[in-house]
Length: 265
Image (cartoon, rainbow, N blue to C red; front, side, top):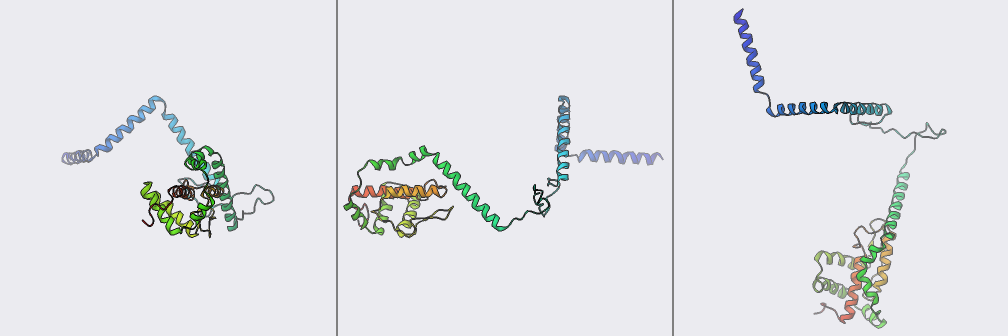
């Protein structure tokens, strides 16, 4: 009998020793820290607020389940419940929603977006004035004569487009990215392809080739009006305004220089 009791006590002691040896010290520190924090909250009287918040959260979830709303614990149903009609005449009839309604909603959203951008653009007159400060400097210059305009008109597009690219890249020292983005649009305008607005798909100068004898100052005003009437330019001018302004700058420089800067040399 004593031998059996000794064996049982020995096995219990070894089991307790094994459990103590296998206890994770990190988890033990976490447990002690949680107990310490809980005692601290209890001393400050905040433990009751935590319990009250938990009760309110559980009550709100229960109310949402009764109303049929999805909660994190209760996933939403695969078949959405149609909205309830408030009209007594059609209260129990389901709401009919067709593809035509979706198209009308998309058109309405696009119209609202364009109207909002128009309001923003009209309220930013000071910013647009600063943006066109360099262009307004040309307004004080005398206009180009008809004879010079006819002479510029006769210049082939291959000549002035190539010379314009080298003028801004080598003479003005613009960055490679700047020149590439400008000349991409200029080549489309010179070829008559035009520029398409990404929001409304409306075209600017489509099937109308530009030449060096164009009135680029008036074209810049038309481009600005076209941009903001179609919802604005998210590229901040790179869509059409910057390239047209570059054409105006090159035209004035070409008239002042008299000949091409690089073409044919």
